[in-house]
Amino acid sequence: MLIGVEWTSQAFDAQLIDSSGEVIAELHRDAGTATIREARFAETFAEIVPQGWLDQAEAVYFSGMITGRGGWVETGFANTPAGLADLGAAAVRQPGRGLPLVFLPGVSSLGALPDVMRGEEIRVLAAAGEHAKATAVMPGPHTKYVAVEAGRITRLGTYMGGETAKLLSRDSLISRLIPAGAPLSEAGYDRGLMAAWDDALPGDVLRRLFSARSLVLFERMPAEEISGYIAGLLAGAEIAEAEQEWALHSGPVLVLGTSPEAQRYLRALRQRGIEAEPRVVATAPSFAGLHRALQSEAALPI
Image (cartoon, rainbow, N blue to C red; front, side):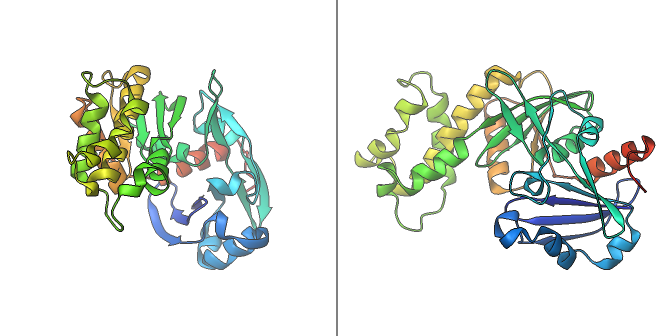
């Protein structure tokens, strides 16, 4: 039995996992690393995780920002290509409350534009497990595209369209026309996608962004659609860029997560003619695989 913890800047998620990778129990707390004062990570962990879990577990695995700078224990990065064995080899082990604490590294891709992720690799490797080759997509403020081959992450790339859209919709020349409280419009999103992919329009995404304002000024788009239009325009630009780099038409594309952002992105990929599949995020199989690997190498002081 083991405990797998994904501790991000926003949330604490833990699972009690058996040797086959089945989840026995799980818990969630809004106790992200950004909320922990005076670096009280050990104390917070002790307050959240039941003693009964600790009594059953052989080790605790930590992923996410808890292992980043300013977290409980800072780890480095396993450079691509990286699989579970590479993560285990680069992990930092410490004793704690009678069982080993294993702090996992992130993954880096050191090309001309270096890229990193911390925590997402656990989800990606679990999602792509049955595929010899796949591309995993994690939509969000910083959308990540991750190539996986034979159980190893071979490269990754981060696109900041989601955060850019939020910034433009909150504090920009364009945002001044957005009605207070207007939700993200699906019609606006679809319109933005089409604008991003219309070769007949002048320029590219930087040229077309101003149309989020000008279309409204000339009453060719409702102001309520501005936020959706910006989000769709930038998501469409991301997908068009990724299409050139990631060979999205040659292998399975797995969209991780069930958030509204993930669902919109999945729909956008399919509208682009890319055969994308939804995947529920799972971390337990990766944690279990890591545990088996480290046990077989006698790398855990159990």
